[in-house]
Image (tube, rainbow, N blue to C red):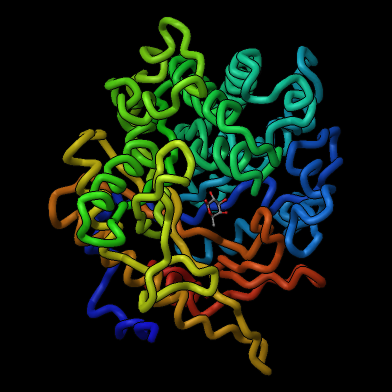
Amino acid sequence: MTKQPSAPHGSLSRADFGADFVWGCSTSAFQIEGGASADGRVPSIWDTFCQQRGAIRDGSDGSVACDHFNRWPEDMDLGRSLGLNAYRFSISWPRIFSARGAAPNEAGLDFYSRLVDGMLARGLVPWVTLYHWDLPQYLQDAGGWTNRDTVAAFVEYVDVVTRRLGDRVKHWITHNEPWCTAIHGNLDGMHAPGLKSLPTALQVCHHVLLSHGLSVPVIRANVPGAAVGIALSLHPIMAASDSAADQQAVARHDAFRNRWFLDALYGRGYPVEPLQMMGADAPIIAPGDLAAIAAPTDFLGVNYYFPEVVKDDANAGFLRTSVVLPEGRERTDFGWEVAPEGLTALLARIARDYAPPDMYVTENGSCYDDVVGEDGSIDDGKRRDYLVRHLAAVRQARDDGVPVKGYFAWSLLDNFEWSEGYLRRFGIAYVDFVTQKRTLKASGQWYRAFLGGQA
Ligand code: FCB
């Protein structure tokens, strides 16, 4: 039996979080923009991946998505009407550079410049993610993130974007979820470029982190008053049983899923045990790389969706752990466990072990199969409860003294959910992908009422 969602929310008010709290929604370029060949944009690895038979569950692609490329003023109006004071979005690298060594594409830069102006005009502070998985295909053709030159290409791209937007954009996130870039893209093949190679995935992982570290001083040099961070996908890890073997599996799993990134970013180098377990598949780490990765940042972005339950499994991957899905847990329609207390615990653990100056929940949200009512409304009570309970979890962390300073709901809009195509809806606004009509769901109406926005 699945546990029913507990009754909403007790009393929760915006004021509980303090006047300076950052309230946003998150999106990413490939998932919403469309405009695939507009203004000189070239293909990304996701455009290519979508062409592979069977790669995307509904056979779709991102060529139109939410048509945000054309409809962004309406989307920013929606953000303002919710009462948000911030908006997190990503820049599509293939809009900015059409080839290695090419001059920057002014039309691509202009698009983001207009978008940023549109946000500021509506009271939304722009939070830019520089890499949310859409690597230019021409770089993949040259080896992608396994090629150290891609690190240099990223730093050049960051230099150009931050020079152009840095007069107005002060909040910069280098990478979104390097674990997913590396592992879904190159080990389990679920994401572009769809490879299945452990040494490739591990080298990609290292180079992505290196490109983060080398970008930090570039952003600081170009943007007076910049706040720079990275957004990690982090998970509390739990044992499938009380056995000593499963407890040890938790430690090993955590050491790669979470600590690999946190330890390196906070100056401790890579944890020893997973590095040893990688053996000959371990990445090539050049002298100075770890110092570069540990460049001090201003905040940590925490993307939280669900905890992971693991067991010892001698036949499973280099960590010898596998993820299990225990019966009887509350889950979203995507199967992800609903565990708001996991967010409180995760934030507390990061504060205790790494003491980042500030933390932001840069993504959190839920996927449910929405039903459009006869009157056109979308009564997504479960998504609303998920939102409310996770906000209560953030408040708890704050009350416990954890420096969490903002929350970005994933996502403003239903969108292209990677290998699931348009089958998975995470939006607080519903998108009809035939008409492109946006309709605020009950969850969005709750968020608007909570934030004090105006219908
Ligand atoms: C995160 C991704 C985001 C979205 C959500 C549901 O891992 O960063 O783009 O797909 O999951």
